[in-house]
Length: 90
Image (cartoon, rainbow, N blue to C red; front, side):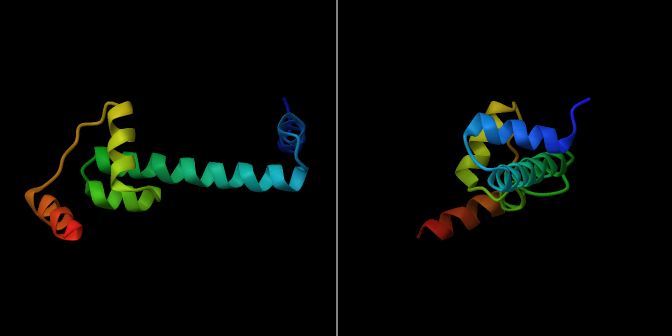
C-alpha cells in the first residue's frame, strides 16, 4: 500500500511542482470536495436550503444548480428563496 508521502511525491512529479505545493493543492482540493459532499448530504436530507448548500460548498447558486443537475439531485426551492433571489438581483 502506498503511503501518503509517496502519493504526494508522485503527484508532485506528475504535475511538475514541488512537494509542498502538491500538498497544499491536495489539501485545498480535498477540503473543497468534502465541503461539497457534506452540502449535498445535508441538502438531500432536507436539512438545509439550496442557498445554504451553495454557501457551505463555497460556490455560487448557479454553480450549485449545475452540480445538482450533474448529480441528478431534485431541485427544491421555496417561494421565499425565489423572492430573496429576485430581490438580490434588483
